[in-house]
Amino acid sequence: MKKPAFRKKSGADGAAEPVEPSVEAASSASAPAPAPASAPAPAAGPGRFAGKGGGAKTTPSLLAAAVVLAAVFGIAEVRPPAAPATAAAAAAPTTAQVERTAAVCPQPLQGLTGSTTLSAYTPPGTGSATGGAGWLSDEAAPATPAAPPSGAPSAPATPAATPAPTGPAAPVPDKNAAPADARLALAKPGTPATGPAANGDAAPGTGALATGTLAPGFTVTQTTVVTEQRGLGLSGLTCTPAGTGFWFAGASTAGDRVDYLSLVNTESSAAVVDIKLYGDKGLIDNDAANGLTVAPGSSQSVLLSTLTKGAVTDLAVHVVVRAGRVGAALHAADGNKGADWIPASAAPAATQVLPGLPADTTTARLVVWAPPEDDADLKIQLSGKNGWFTPAGNESIHVKAGMVAAVDLGKVTRDEVAGLRLSPSDDKHPTPIVAGLRVDRAAGNGKSDAAWLTGTVPVGARATVADNRAGASTLYLTSTGDAATVRVTASAGSGGGTPATKEVQLPAGGTVALPAPEPAGLNGVFALTVETVSGGPVVAARMLSIPAKDVPMFTIQALRDDRSTVKVPQAAQDPGVVLR
Image 1: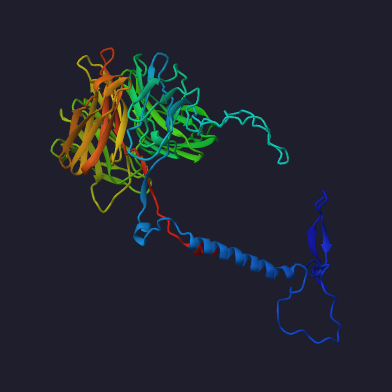
Image 2: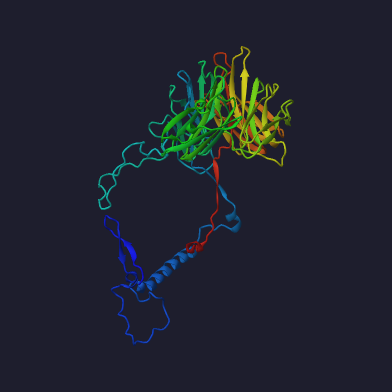
């Protein structure tokens, strides 16, 4: 006899009861009576369940499905797209402007007496988008202003049978309007907006969002001035989108260095972050650096010296986000010798270009990380006014696998502006690297400030930096390939002014520095936009110099492609998709 099958009871004990295996398949109220034994055998025909309960519905169901498919095919063929794409057009994607751009600014780390300015800007566009808004809010800017605040109770669900109220309809929140508590709002493209960040030693990070016409090219700059001895200097950075991975080269926990990693979560869910530190002996193990939870709408700052178990002169930092997304930034302060943000590096690559070395560089220190898989042997080259050359005495650097190497370059620019390039000594042995460069400038009184450069990407079609001030901004432009023509545009000022434009010619492999063009009748801060007209590729950096208390305070930011457009693939008519 066959063993019984089992079906789970619906009772609370969850036990199973035996069921005869043939009953489930054969029982039906509409099943015909069994044929007598003397009846002739049926002819071969439908399968074993033909004639059973439910089986009689098969033919109508198939007919109904066929009718539906016929209708779908008919509509698809009778009403094709208004302008069917040709095979060639279908293969080529089109370009469309972005409709939403978000960025995250870190905690200012300004001490008790420092002050921080936030500036936002969107270049004038030529797209068809309409409406939109741009704004900055402390800590977590919501995805849309209509989103409820964190921790607010949600409204109870309305039963389906409950009739809708008959009173006047409630106003629908405008998803493209800045929230009432926004710290800064951008009114229109072409005119920057600027204002102070939160005050105090515990000021939070900032979320920024732009939609509609304000989204393409939307950029935010954060600038901090600290005049007290601890953290003295000018710190600036371009706020970056939230992400899941960031690289920084040039951190330290030795001497008077006080380096903080800022993590800001503007998302609606918690993020889990690992911090990996590499020194001259490789990866620095520390369980405290793994599994850090950053709550939604919160900011955290992590002191690197609590993770290194001793002083380490040169560090590379890799932020890995295991869950969620965060904005990450690394601030370095070297006592009274200067402070600034160490910008996030471009992704590890065999060749890294670092633009923006001032002519009056006093000292420069290069820090390079190589992956655990392979050593890196690299050529060091500078881009001068006539092209690439190798600095005497600093021709190359060797980096062991999984470790950090550093070299003091001294006064490497020799009173000329430059960009720095690292590339494989042997083209057949490329090793992806991360690189950072500390640059110091000193006044005749011995007081100094520092800035950090990092590997960057070309400006592409267009790149912008928001916070520029009268007589204080210098542009560094380097053509890493062919000779290039670059268009530089100074926007109107935040308080008034007429935009100004200038074209600059760059020799192949050469670097040009120029005082930033300024709008006529300037009032307030202005933005600088760099566009590649021909040749290149071109990398660029902006130095903002604001001397204070006899200190030559300065900060340098690389300009990167603003990604104001995206590629949209073409779609071709294919009625057969309903069968897949």
